Amino acid sequence: MGRINNKKTISPVVATALLLVVAVISVVGFGDFFTSFQSNIQSNIETNSNNIMSNKLEIETLVGSNLYLRNNDNKNITIKNIRINGINCEITSKNIINIDNIDLSKCLENFENEKINIIIETNKGIIKKYFFLRNKIENDDKNHLSEIPTNYIGIYTSTDLDNIRNDLTGKYILMNNLDLSSIDNWKPIGNTTNIFTGILNGNNYTISNLKINRPTEDYIGLFGITDKSEISFLNLNNINIEGHNNIGAFAGQFQGTIKNSCSEGIIIGNGGIGGLLGLVYYDSDILNTCSKGTIVGNGGIGGLIFGGYKTTATIINNSYSNINVQYNNGTSSLFIGFSKYISVYNSYLSGSIISYPGKTGVFFVESIPDQYSNNFFDITVSGETEIYVDGPEYNYTNEFIGKTTSEMKTAQTFINAGWDETIWNLQDGSYPKFQWE
Image (cartoon, rainbow, N blue to C red; front, side, top):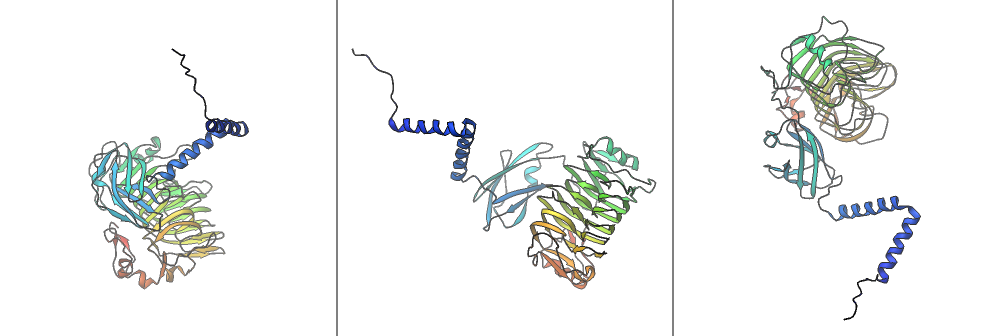
């Protein structure tokens, strides 16, 4: 028998390809070559896959059981199915235009204090996002919970409230109204080194007579600085706050969710001042909120929030500001001071501005917009027609609508705009208020 030769030869085509690879590696280096090779493979996968929805549909946030979605495409996107941790949600097919929300209460009722993976199937592909669920508390808009929920700490006195600073990650719930008039100079909870990351549920109670006198200090409010925090169902009445920079009734610097909460009173400072919140950071949700009273400062003021340049993906929905702003210089507005990629829906303002001198915008001072719709302002009281000053120019005609005082106090103005009457109390003869006010 003849001897079998197992040696395989390389075809001329393969040999040429290998020589080219070696030549490329010798020029750019192996690391750069591998990165480029890996990038090309990934690019091909994404290009050929129908499961990638780059920038067409975004999952904005999950507030309670409501999942907020944003359609960045010019065409309708239809939600076909939603899965949470592999379990199908029974939802009706829904078209998403601009921004919308889907109620996932039936899907989420079996999940608590855990990481969930939400996968959305649409007619154009699949998107997914992770969230971490905290303990759920079923507050309604007017009544009080009589029992302390599991894993929460009840707040009964001003001392209890002050003790939140001893555990900045805790979950707290008010069990009655609090009067802080006996405290001459409240110390804000949380600072640059010890940040509040917990939950404060106001349980539809009110904290009255918050007094802060710290004219040389920054990050001033009930809370100094928060991150991934939650404040809800809480009112602050008759506040009297003075600080230097970054001041707000609820927090000097805020990141997280605040909902069904209002503030009323006087705030004095240098700059970075908001009636509700001072600085606001990325991915925050400001829902069903209001600020009322007076702000006095040198500039950099927003009637509801000051904002700042790190407000990306922040949403303000169903909120109002009835703030009178007095400032000496710089720029200020009756709603938002400065912002970047912030969305505002179904909100209004009814205050006025006195400036000596300065630049004034009704809704904004300087902003790079994201999404806006169904917002109104009282053109009679504010005396302003400039919705916005400084920064890029945008057409806000249909998103921020000036109305006379008479029109602002006509229910049909807001009914025609599709405002939710389960949230808003719309009556002729008065500005819109929340059902729970």
